[in-house]
Image (cartoon, rainbow, N blue to C red; front, side, top):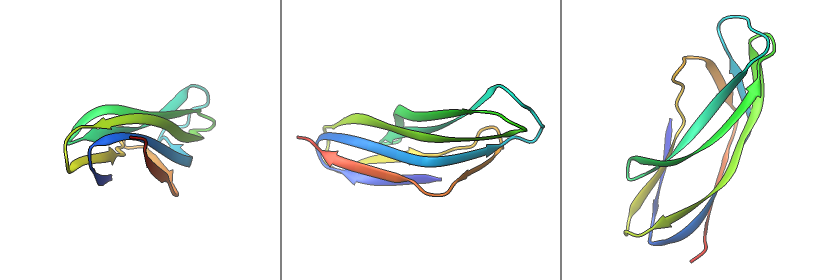
Amino acid sequence: MTTTFVLQPGIYLVQLHVPFVEVIIPNPNTGGTVGFTVPVLVNGNQISAFTGQGVLVNNHAIFPVTGNKLLQITDANTVVGFNAQNPFNYSINALFFNIIFTRLQ
């Protein structure tokens, strides 16, 4: 799933808050960690990422993915996207998320 926004030149504080990511892996496993990454794309190129990870208990982990990033946008009509992918084919549930852009300059 990709979510995109069109921004104008400026410096932006981008805040992502996914309070509840649930990951279920197919083979029972206790211990170890599993993570989830939400890349930040500017005009289709990854420039940064938000990440989170949790500890597996009986093939199941629950954790948040949150953070702040500064983006400097120099061109008009720049497309900023967030591309949540599941490269391992795990069962991943994220019930809701917030993305907040604050233009600083």
